[in-house]
Every structure is written in C-alpha cells, then in structure tokens.
Length: 118
Image (cartoon, rainbow, N blue to C red; front, side, top):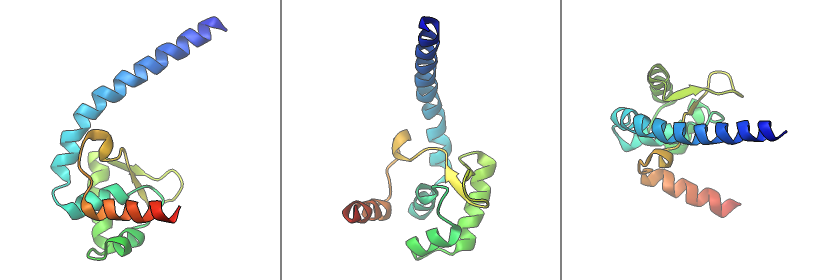
C-alpha cells in the first residue's frame, strides 16, 4: 500500500511539471492562431457540448460554417480535439486563462450573465 501511495505521489508531481512545461509551449501556438477577438471567442466557447450553430448564435456576427472552418483548422494544429460526448463537435485543449491569454470582452460578458443565472 505504501509503494502505491509513493507511485501516486510521484505521478502527481510529474503531471504537475508536465502541465507547466506544456502551457509554456501551447501559449504561442494558440496566440498565433487566434488573431481576432471573434476567433478567440469561438475558441473559448468550444467546450465540446456546443454545436457550430450554438456558437454562431451566441456570437451573432459569425456563421456556423465559419465556426466549422476554424474547428477544422484548429484540429490540424491540435489546439482543439473531438468532443468525447458529441460527434462532430470540438473542445479546446485548455482555456485561454490557463495559458495566460486574455479572454475577449464578449466572453467575459457571457460568463457574467451565466454566473448571474446560477
């Protein structure tokens, strides 16, 4: 039992350092490929449960086809991955805040509204 705890502790430590190293490498890749607030908003809203139409409706000034194009582009770059729950949908590999990228105001406003509903 003691050796399992020791292994678990070492794995947790390894995971912690891997996350730190990975975030430093991911940030430039994400920043380079999210050039506008709209792209950044689409990325941040890509949670694996929302459809292209859901995101287009939330943002208002973008079509679901545009969202789909970004998902395809970003999937090739590995900054989004297929949703484990919904076929044809994608989710971001990490939040913008996790890698130190500012969330666009439109998303901050949505988060504020979501928090008020709870």
